[in-house]
Length: 68
Image (cartoon, rainbow, N blue to C red; front, side):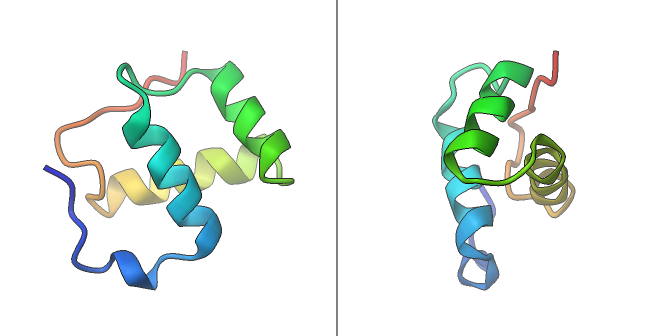
C-alpha cells in the first residue's frame, strides 16, 4: 500500500517520479533513472535523491526500488 496522505505536498517533479516508480513492475533501473532525468530535464542524481526521499518518507510502502 502506498502512503498518500501528504501527496499534495510533493512537488510536481516528485509526483512525476513517484508515478514512474510505482508504474514499474520491478522497480527502476539505472537506465530508467537516466531516461527520467532526460525527460524531466534534471540530473540523474536529482532523480535518485527524490526516489530515496520518497522511499524514506514511506511513499512506496512495501515496494522496493532496484538501482542495479
